[in-house]
Amino acid sequence: MREFGISPIIISLLIDGMLKVLLWVVAVMLPPMAIFFPLFAILEDWGILPRFAFNLDRPFEKCNACGKQALTTCMGLGCNAVGVTGARIIDSPRERSIAIITNSLTPCNGRFPF
Image (cartoon, rainbow, N blue to C red; front, side, top):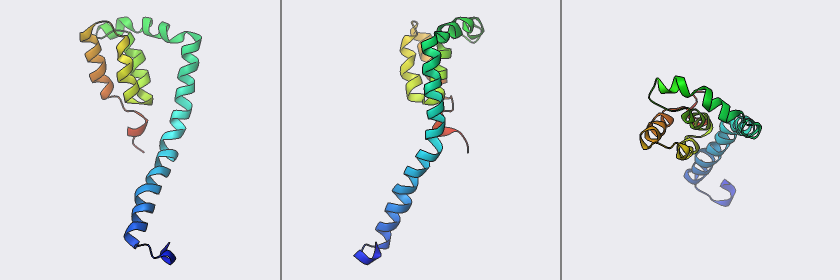
């Protein structure tokens, strides 16, 4: 690139700022998401997720939440934005807000410490 007369600052911006970030996203975030989302889709197709929510309803009630929050928390492991928007299925506004707040604290793929 220097042969074309491009400034070293621009080269550093392109290589260090954009290319390395793109490669990091592909290397770190893509493999867990490529495993998690198809697995979650299979569990959803098999009908295991409603049973999962029903069985976790009693332990979650002890924490003032509902069993449906387990589904949004599982979705939040892949991406918090999906988990927060998935909290729409919860009927009570109080339990929905609890699900949204606790889902924001769930570590998603982008926040796993590597």
